[in-house]
Length: 466
Image 1 (tube, rainbow, N blue to C red):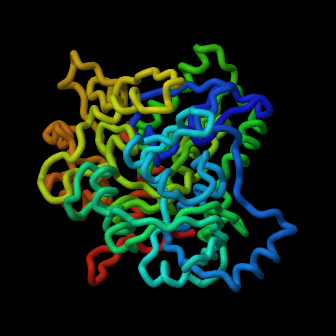
Image 2: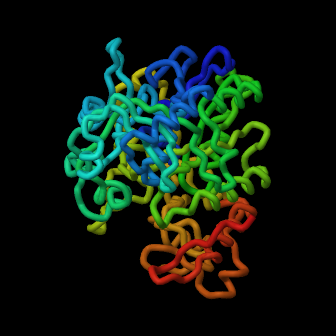
Image 3: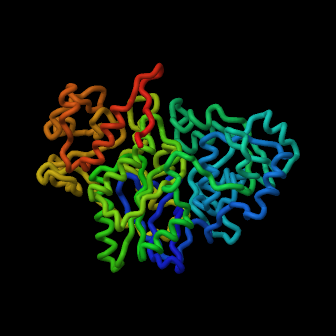
């Protein structure tokens, strides 16, 4: 699902922005080129907010309507739909859309065209909620404080086939899948779909709302930058120098293609992520240091949070050599093949107009002492960096070449396949080579892990410092 589309009015001729709900280039494999006339999300960008003059009337109407309370993840999906990120959807999926997505990974529009849509965006309700809705065709959606945030109209209620949904989305029904445990396992036996009338834009009041630019606001921002090309990097991890290499090299390639002012959209995932991922507030603080340290050029970079939750559904959802750290939840083996994401991308329905330019994998080159593109003829000279698990203060882990890492990174020792500091002195005084990550960004990660405090259920992060 290509979510941001260039248009003539914004003078942007190339758009590479990606939705994590379908194609996530968080692990540096492809440059996707989309022309101005390509509308891969089904057409014109449409926001689903009610007119200002109608807000009071909608709020008054909602008082008498049956109500469905949204979970945190439900609210994140409402955010995604309401701003047009998930076009052509105009609300939570009805059964026909749900089945097309589940079985075809796409939606067929009335004109016969196909739009890529690989994971369902649905709203679950339980038996009591279904009973309270009855024959009503309009339902009020309320937040955790019972504030009305939207009205769902022309509703359709249908069975929630949880096992089938899980099996087709993740390729397994094994227990322990993060999104399933968080959002599906305990959800209701019914799904309710319909058209959204959103009363107010979704805000989180966490100090980061100014980073949550809608697709329409992003277009305005790119116009302000006089961009003639936009390339996006969506990720759920802190930025290390392997990521930065891919981003800077992409800009170089676009300049070689004849574009004069390519602008990078650094697009951190802002919705649900699993418990052991670095929280959004700390990632944003780390991204700020990456820009301050000059690893990425602040003059040619726009940082904006993408509000989608993440499924961790392997090739169904994203491209990456390390499928978002998702091993099999029960067995000690990989759940997904590292190469399948890029193969699925090349065959995905509705994405036929993409021009895919492959990258080589970025890795740490010991001979140069910096991140570089992997050369298979010198395999032993490279260390592959995986930012899946983070241990104080060693961010890079799950490396196939553990002894090589320990040679370059001597303060670390091995414990349960992760790299940990060898002792308290080294923990405080030793840092990885600057070529792995800029010092400012690394310091933020050290602060984050230092902030973890013991709790009954293990370690929990304290709030990010101001």
